[in-house]
Image (cartoon, rainbow, N blue to C red; front, side, top):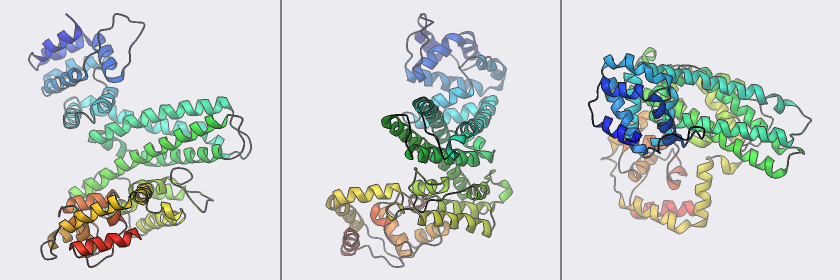
Length: 453
């Protein structure tokens, strides 16, 4: 009987200790087969390894194991799976990377269940978060000295090692991006340690200085290798910024879910660590370009519109006083003022403007038609306007009504779009203090026509 047939037979059996016992007894074969299915890893030194398992079969196996673990009597037996790959912290990361897009709901339920029903799994995720901080610190220690010397060049060997390290850190960060998207326990683990965001910012700063160093002066490494390395570092910075945002975003989500809750009951947000990040910012540049020579906070603001989200989260959690909050927001504003005008609305907005310049009629006319088709009377949407302004107080009623018109009156969708900086171009370019807005077709068309010019 093949391993696949054995698994299928076991899946048809009861969800009890007998299934867990079978997993423990055949853990070595299962480890190789699961790694092969999830990661494409195959140990050539073991030609007797089983056939490639269908990924769906692997997912069903873990779902059944999760059902078994709901009975605490199986826990002691299941700990035998920790000696192999079958049930360790790394398994959760690989499950996230493999099934995140194809089986999102099943994956989220599975990860929650495994962290809840197998208590040691949550502990292993926490240990992984500690290790991540250490790995970020190691990157700083390894490369910071190469960013401070004014003389010297990067040779081919150094650039090759740097490229290999960056490639490894990309894989590591991608794993964390996957698991934080689908497993709240992993986000909580990162939030428990205030060093995480700070070390991520410091590591990003070292990467930024490496980019500048690679772009300046003559290096003995070939130009194509230098350019390749720079592109990899920029991609890694995007990943780090995205990971920081995913973690910090959960602070706002948590606060929004329970507005007015006592700050002591809120998660360990550590928003005040951003004050330390600001104090560490050093730049002699007068014109910044996101993801190339810009500090961590500016990259975060440019990619995700972070300032507004941070302001609301800080207000709801009560972790920062007014002076500290002003310090953070003013610093972001000052950094934004140092960027080129084309970048001030963020990279995405710039790309949208380029796209509209190439295809203006098709893009804007379609949006004009959508806006013109929506009719929201001021008296009918007052509750929705109030709901949006309760979350984001500084908006004009007219601007909010225009957003509600686009999102079909869904206040929550409007708030999410504003916080994520994902408004369509006409709304993104509209004055947010607009007090009056009328939905008729001629008005919608005239607004969009004015945006074209």
